[in-house]
Length: 326
Image (cartoon, rainbow, N blue to C red; front, side, top):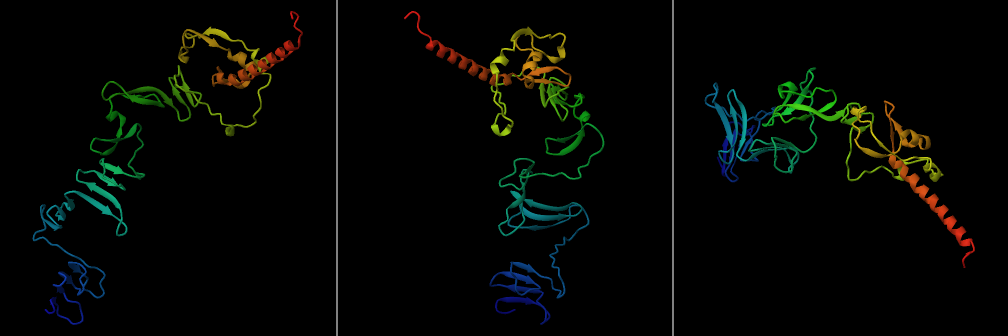
C-alpha cells in the first residue's frame, strides 16, 4: 500500500491480483490500470479470456439465483436455476448495435410490445418498420390452411374447419363473413387468377360484371403516347347513315343467367354495327357480341363536321342566287 494505492500481489513480474486506486475510486483485478470502477483482466499471460463469476451460496434447486443490479432494484440481470436468464427493467429494454451513437435496433416496452427498427414506441404486440420474412414456416400438404393471429398476438396456421362452422367451398370464389357468428359464405366475386367476375363464375374479360354498373366518372386511356397508326375518320356521315337506332327489350327469361335489365332500352344491334364498324364489336368466348358505344363518338363528331361543311356550301350557293323578290 502506498501513494493512495492498494496492492495485493506476490510477484514482481506479474500484475497485482487486486489493485485499488483511491484517487479515481477504481479497482482492477490483474491490472494496475483500471479503466472503470471495476476492471477485470485475464491474469494468464497467454490467456485470451476474462470472466466475472457470480456464484450463489446454493445452486441446485428452483429458486436459487444470482443477480447483477444497477442503479436501483428495478434494473437487473438474473440467472435462476432451471429457469434461465432474466433481463429486467421497470421502463423498457433497448437493444443497440453499431457505433457509439447507434440507433435502437429492437425494444421491449413495459406493456410487452416489441418494436424492431422503430423511431418511436411499439404500438402493437409486434411492431416493425420494414419488411418481414418468414422462412421455413412449418407447413403440411393439407388443404384449407390459413394464417391466423389471435388477440394475444400469437400466430398460428389453422384449418378453416377449426375456425368456422360453415365455409364457402366454391373454387375461386372469395368468401365473406355472414350474419351468423363463425360462418363464412360465398361472395359474388370470382377470381381465377386471370379474370375477375362479379355476379358470374365464367368471366371472359379481365373484369366482367353480370349486372348494372354505376359510377360517377368513367375514364378511358387516350394519351397519344399509347397509340400508333393514327388515321383520320373519313366518310363519317355516310357511315352514320347506314346505322339504325332501335328500341328493344331484352329477352330476360331466356337469358336469365346473363342478368339482363328489364324494361325498354334504346341502342343498336351489334350485328348491324359490325357491318359498318367491325372494330367496335367484340365477341366473347361464347360468341355473344357487345358494342363499344364510346367508339361511335368520334364518328359522330366527324359526321357533324361533314354535315356542317355541306350546310356552309349551301349557304354560299344561296348567297350567290339573285333575289327574285328584290
